[in-house]
Image 1: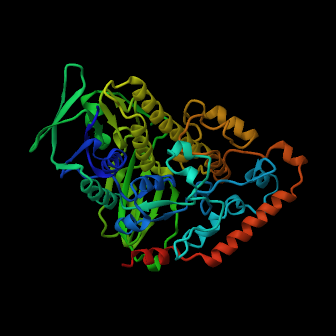
Image 2 (image 1 turned 30 degrees about the horizontal axis):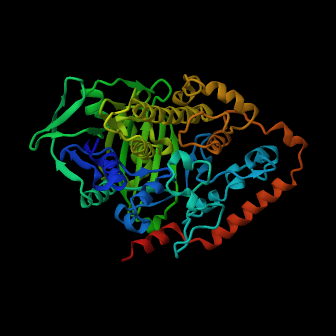
Length: 518
């Protein structure tokens, strides 16, 4: 059997992989993780998809187990600021859009919306976030909306199987380095061998398969399956096995970031339970609130902005609190490896592929890849069908997210700098232009978005189109002949529910302070 796994590289990708494989297979496989004590991790304060809760559930971890150790907070949405025009914002929440008489409420909003805020009219989460509240009450109970976190039929499903069945109301923010540290202890306690050493060479056999990795102090580490978690270096997959890398830069030009980890008094500042993406002259700035600090960074394209200008802009954006904070400059490799599983090597994380973190997909890519590896884990015959299924699934997820992110720039109305003007004339991924034309006539549905699983449901596309403002959309023609009264009742119900939640839910900081108490 294939029962000896060597993971090269630690960080979030390496330790998530080690932990998940141990939880899945226990002592039936032998896992060694080797990581350098000199190579730092890219993680700068992470945001996630709501599906990440399945990862922690699979490991048997409760929020109270891991969140305090990782300074974690809740994320209810992405807040987009200044993408349409300066001063404008909207939310892309973790909340499925409701339907009325077979049409999504967003269609009814286009027909006769109560206000100019589609997100507040169609979702309760916008009001909860604006008020800075926790989606859980102090007793731990979840807000009472159409979310089901415990249905038995949902347990054990993969992310792709889960999509469309329900929508969980939040994801997480956490410190990536602290999560890696927490999962290190989890995995080592369950039998993962942890080797801190530098890999100096990758040995191949006569077939071109990896037979082992040579280390500076521990000799050669041999295995059956090798997992490449070496980040943008792609030490095993791209360098040793020479697997080509497919760039996305023609459609997603942002190739750099500068990040700051800014200590702040979060009790005084308050925690807005969302990731904020604020458009700038040559990209956008993320803001991720954690317990004790804020993670922030400027994602930009070097064709339009120098690293020095980007850092200066970011420090001015943050204000005096950033004065003595060391900046972390990152050059991003945007795209994916042609195949993420080659021979006996599987790449997970940045070695597999990466897009800019606009919709917090980095951890999602890792989680999805690990799920697919377990689902298609090789047997003694190394059936190529399993490899091909893995490669297809990983490629579809990344290509689909690429298309979704490209839509953000096509749909953004902002055009006050050359960077933003160029976003309207840049090439788009195959199929997106045709889909946009369909969406001009009718809002996206499951039949008109990217056709393979990629983590983004139709309502996500609706939010971007309605919020960004550059692509004209209109309601279904049938609504002009339909009675609006049922839709008005739903809008009223959402408004009333939002008011009730704002009155009864605790502030986010208060909730997490309670969680941090011994």
